[in-house]
Image 1 (cartoon, one colour):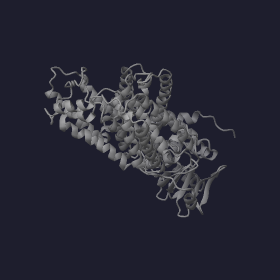
Image 2: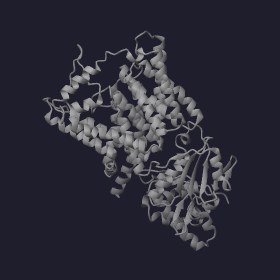
Image 3: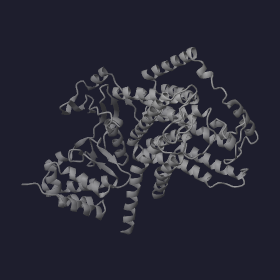
Image 4: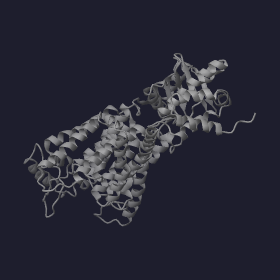
Length: 617
């Protein structure tokens, strides 16, 4: 009994951390620099709401490490971190700061946390990015207004609110969200989202320009070219044409924007760094060695190049896993270019590569602006890859057929279900089903994660759990904002139809089996909000299958009691279902449920049903 209570408690802690704490931690990691007073505030948010919770999650379920260690990006990170720590053996410093051991751990927790979050709560990634981008947009708009009011020639916008206190470092974060809005403009199918994103992109671009930094401009061009390369649609072609025209106009009318501020001493810094690298080209100078460059009267501690920084600190051996991570990340983005989130993450990485050509130099740091250039994009790519391998992230491309092509597809179809707005489910001539989902308001969850994609993802997850569900054939995004899914229906009849044709004894046996099936769903963490006898099929081999699964969610652990009770309460809305399951044959239902679920869960379900008011006769 004590062991069961301990397991139940650990499951509740795991669910709370991965479903609620990690999303908040990621949102704050992306946005906190815009409103916290200093970087230490960002560190506290990240350590307390993302890194530490991820460590607790891995301690609660060590088997999660197995899925993480199957990801090449994480293996590359571990190799890089291991060599960096090993390099402390030949460090010229007399003492070693314990913080040097924490930095690789916190970086690994970023990758691990993204892997867990994208598997168990992947539907929140788009809202999280959108919320962080809106925070950045509002802060940048306010900063631009203040900057414009007090502008004088030669001024550079620093960042204003929050912990952003350096024009160049601020420009990296501004450019990060500029890439996000560029991605939205290129990929969105909704006109009202496009009309909102275009001004947002313009504001973020102005913020980058106001910093006076040229590095992020080069990086933004590289990100735009990458998005155009992987998207290959009309908007991407228009974007490239706009870039070419803008560059030509800049060279023609304002060439000093490129030639001015040429005293950045980068060439001298790179030359000095290369001379130092030549002293220990293979193993580097060690992770904690001090880099001091003196191109002027000031001493600088960064070579203004990520690649040169890696070569200086950990040498060619450490450079191999570092460049492997970048190459692997870009390859994954290209390979999975049919999935929008892969496009976003790989575009952010391309931006980081462009910015890192002439900026930075530290290899493993605490959370700061440089994380937006490398570690955050790589962690997102690793998380997406893990989620896709675990079948919680879609692998199927969403097609956008022309109205004529979609009409041809649905010609001669039989209407199975419809509402006041028209058909909802069609049986096509080839025997497959086409389910339509109406357009949702742009700020709802259905806009961020279309119900057609939820239907497909849930079907795949159910099949992974051994629960029969429709086999998905195609996903469609239609011009009017609605979506659709074409699938192969399960062969069988609904449980409601089956119960209607049975006598009392056979009905009791079937309801007992159904009780066992409900318990199996609950123990597997499946919460099917729309569970009723019309959404459960009895297949030809006698198994139970689920249909209409868009309104379904798979939790990390077995369902807690409140969700189980809510699930059964929904089935009592249908008079005939209530009579069969909770009045005439409730004893058989509970017997079947008790054969799989724990005695405690069964007792709570029984008490909940018995406490419900009986309908008037």
